[in-house]
Image (tube, rainbow, N blue to C red; front, side, top):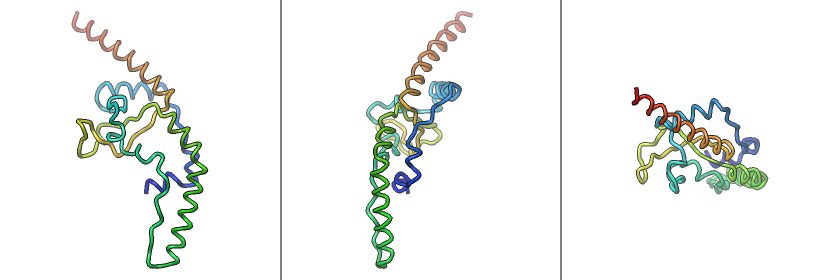
Amino acid sequence: MLLLNLCSPLMIENWQHKEMTNEELKKLVRDVYDGITFTSLQCGDHVLSVFMPVIFFGAAPSSPKTSKDNQVNRRNKLQYIEDCLTYEKETPAREKFIGNIGMLYEDMSKTGPTSINGYPVFFSCKIVSKEDGAKFIEMYNKYIEMREEFEKEWKAD
């Protein structure tokens, strides 16, 4: 379950952004331009309804499930307490990670079966740091200029 995975003891190591290479950024720029990939930069204030996993980024552990078996209840409560302690321990790293999100993206092939306000809905996404997001925007603008220049030359010939 996503909520429990976010609170697992090993998760704190994953609250870091992976730096994108120039080749990865170039591919992302081409894919966004060609409509293969959709980004959070394209949906304005609708990010939470487009990229559903974002809703769970700061989610605390869910309440323990109850059972008719007291021993199971004890184990569930102990696991819940452990998850809460881990959640508290990871809070600074998680908040730093969330604060450094520059952009979300996903391939259009992974869109859900419905849309909201005309936007696709994704149940998965990839995350780009603010630094890589700024590089993406710069590269994307250069790519648009190059494509427009190429189109002008193409039409002139």
